[in-house]
Length: 265
Ligand SMILES: NC(=O)c1ccc[n+]([C@@H]2O[C@H](COP(=O)([O-])OP(=O)(O)OC[C@H]3O[C@@H](n4cnc5c(N)ncnc54)[C@H](OP(=O)(O)O)[C@@H]3O)[C@@H](O)[C@H]2O)c1
Image (cartoon, rainbow, N blue to C red; front, side, top):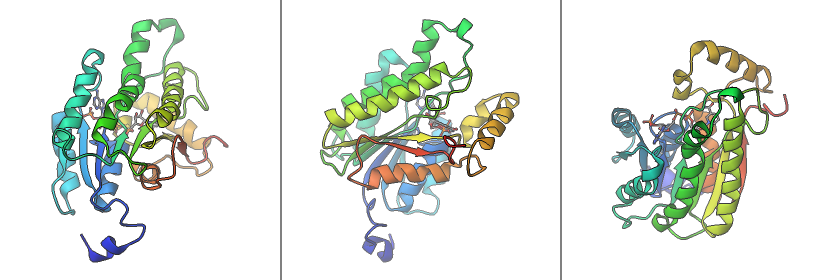
């Protein structure tokens, strides 16, 4: 670590902090992990796919000192959710010995557009696990593995579908609003540990690769046309919102928006 970084008043805030990024193997989470590494944090990442995890670790280790740890764990199985999360937290902290300073949650499945006529309760439940159940369970289990201080934080991820819904977004809109409510309620329950949520606009990540191209292009065009910046987001930009939630130890119970001015366009 350079002497310059160690002495920097603002640049040293993440030095030797331990940060777990659940969903850090691609997209926004990967960039949060990459940025935290650049500022000298010890980073642990997870995702469900082992080969994707291995590749992310390799990319994160390039150009920085020290190794990056990572654990593959599928968080979409609701009956095993508590056990799965405990596994990751135990591995990330060496069974609770090396406590975390920050938890960032960016893991998310793709929730497609929904035709109300085809909606049933199974679909609602299945789509909600990663977006609603996991954040609440992180609130239940995470604090056992976090340093108990206002310097520590949990940062969740929502989305913009509840603020400016388009047709077919009933599930995404519901879950996005849900996690923001969970954020504010957990901030009260978990005090002094801070709990915040980043609400990103459309961001060009690997998630886009999982959408059919015919659906994607019109969605991107429609989004860009309503922004003030005239751009789609990049994960390197949006990662800054998470760093803000981590580093400002006075921000708590807050939703941070980063969307190119989409709500005003
Ligand atoms: N990109 C956007 O335009 C946008 C806009 C608003 C909100 N968001 C939200 O922001 C979050 C991050 O999005 P992104 O674009 O960065 O997505 P991404 O590149 O697809 O990354 C998703 C991450 O979640 C992990 N993940 C997915 N399913 C998982 C599972 N069952 N268990 C454990 N980990 C799992 C992925 O790893 P594996 O693939 O290995 O499981 C990956 O690390 C998501 O919640 C997304 O809905 C994104």
